[in-house]
Length: 366
Image (cartoon, rainbow, N blue to C red):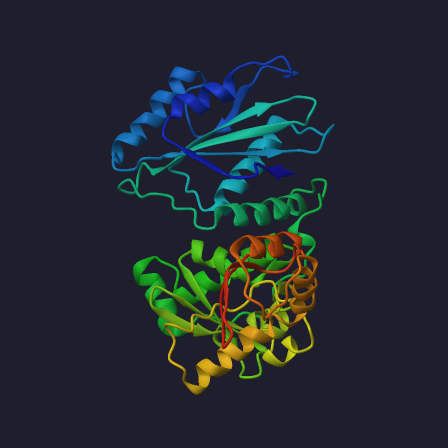
């Protein structure tokens, strides 16, 4: 069983209901409402019931929630089986019985499936809004659990990955705060977010892992040793910080490194390597007229000239080809001739003035 690639939220109930109930040539049977907790069955009736919830929270711009559950090609369920699965799915997703919803059955060659259309506004809890944090990742995991619990065909998915290991339990104070506020403690939020990400992705880069957590308002900091070795993460949610050891063994780097890949940093080219005639594509910019000739700047200029060693032979050969040498005065048109005949990979010389006592060069990066 599969859900949509991304759970959708919208502004207009009539639009999604009209789409779900509209007949189409590829449908083997006419779409129909088979379950939910609404009374109506037509587009107008369903829309009217949903709009009543919308009036409870006019500040909410997207009260519509929409997903689908699809069987493998060629499989089918009874209406009662679909209702039981859909009710179980919505409960695990965090919806209450007082969140209005309807289930619309579609039967076509691509596979039998239902559309679940729900209101995010609770009609009996002062218009409390369903937030659905991390819901796409959570939904994928729940669908895999439904296949197991309802004895459906097991499709390939994240459940085949190694399950998370031991988690640190909530402390007594954290449990008391959860009971008092009705909100999950930061520790639990971080644990569930990491579990969902590592369940959804077989492997993930460290950059994408941090980005996925940021979308859940969780910051992750990579802890690096002085040797450059990765030691793990520390996390923060709503101003509360945790080390991985405070979350549980499942979140130690020895376990998470099996799923998270670290891209090695690009090492800088050592100055000594330039003397080995390496091809440096971007020479260091040096402006002798604006940089004081300190010990560091002299070394900087020395490094600048060393980068031209691989191209001197080409330059000399080109000068000889036009009847000059590197020490003789040259006219501007001769300089351009040298540039045209030199190797195309060598850096471009924008202006060269040769004098008997000194040579002043201004180089322009390719």
